[in-house]
Image (cartoon, rainbow, N blue to C red):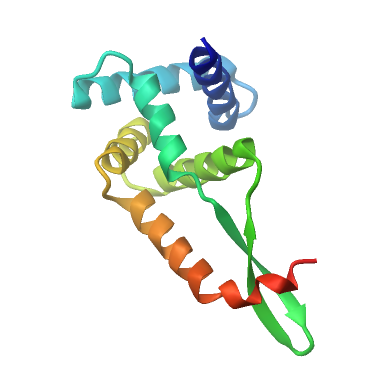
Length: 145
């Protein structure tokens, strides 16, 4: 029951992020098209669970901020503690990538989700780059204030 409530809340968060100029009906139609395309490509029964699992697996654990210390600007890793903040950052990243790519929004969005479900593509690459950047700057973690 708790997973169903989380998925339902996740769906509403996603609709509000996709929404353009307050048109919630259009955003819900776009999400339904995306879910239908995911269902068609993966032959699954519930594509919303696949979308939720991708967001659980690919959400960033750290974010990098630049702080000025003396005359140098240092990149400092900060852990993201809130689950909703992690999901929101990943949602923004996916939506911006889908808008930048050629073709329709729903096609590119569903392609990104299916690729990340199969552990390849843009999200996996960005996640590994972020973890590499955090690992190289882990000695500066004491500058968090």
